[in-house]
Image (cartoon, rainbow, N blue to C red; front, top):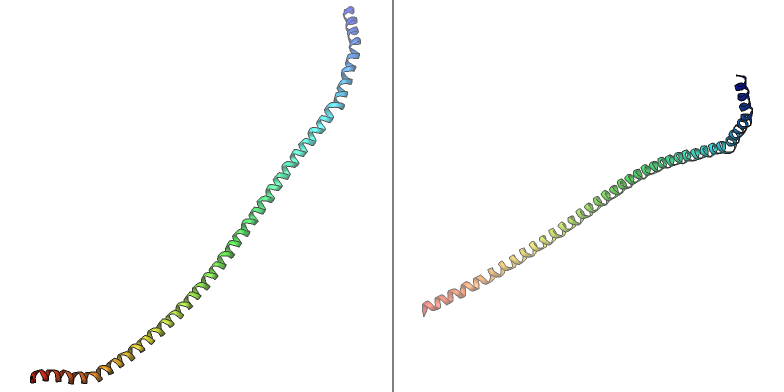
Length: 149
């Protein structure tokens, strides 16, 4: 058994440099590869999260601006409709005034025409009255002249 223990001690003695080299390699890789890699991954994650936060804030700001724009658009449309309604009322008032003026003008024209017709009728009656006696005399003379002949 002593041989086995001596052989085992010899194997362990020869394995010590390998163990030391493996440990040194582990520390070297950890310091030179894994720590910088972890640092880069952390920075990348922070940059990605920052970009996401920035995008979310931009989206929120855009939503607010869109809402403000919609409100301004609604206000502008309301103002436009108000101005259109005012203009329409003014046009209706102008139209009513023009219609009133036209009615007055038409009423004056009708009154003038009636007055002219009344004058012409009176003149025609006077002429008929004046000429009717002369016509009656002439008709009687013509009739009497035929009867005498």
